[in-house]
Amino acid sequence: MKILVLIKQVPDSTTTIRIRPDGGDIDRAGVKMVVNPFDEFAIELAQQLREKRSDVQQITALAVGPAGAAEALRTAMAIGADDAIHLQDGAFETLDELQTAALIGAVVRDAGYDLILCGKQEIDLDSGQLGPALAERLDWAHVGAVTALEVGADGRTIEASRRIEGAEERVRCGLPALLTIEKGLVEPRYPSLPNLMKAKKKPLAVKSAADVPGFADLAGAVGGTHMHKLEPPPARPAGKQIKGEPAQQAAELVRLLREEAKVI
Figure (cartoon, rainbow, N blue to C red):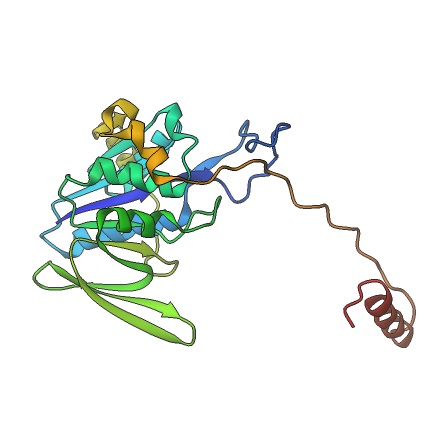
């Protein structure tokens, strides 16, 4: 079984985000970049499958992004991936998720993967479109937001669970398939220092637009969206402190909710 894990490098959720003056992107100066947390579940699941099964022959990590995304791929290899593919080209930076799915599909379609894993969403764009869109491009079975997974003894079928409103849905399908992983399926491990050092010696293939079959026609054929401007959320107004006796505070709170907040 060959497994491909999609990785994205995103700003750390604890980092202070500032918008560039032109509104075209965030100001990345000094911003700590990390592996998308949901993708951490995906790479951990791939490694656990290898530890449980003898038929997992290869785990490959793939990322689309600038030079710095190689750090995320090295982290994935320190956790367990055997090698990595880095799609790096200035032409890739303007692609939306549907176009990125088409790009990845063009690269991996004939690579012989049996299972593709990725997080259910990214914490930056938060759309969750990439996995389903890639499955559609490849014409593969897809199960989203997976919370439990069993691989058949033959290694050619899977049974996955996913939470739906008020219930749990179990889906059985054959391979090849693409799964997007929900929080809680596995607990990501921290890569050890020896494994981080070993990851530096594992193969990392960098591919540009020239290496992607039909890339010149890809973006236009898929269509896509264009982000015109980013804006920070409006500043929150300062809070109010109500003083006085409890009865006075309650009366003033009701007045404020009715006259100012207009919620009652």
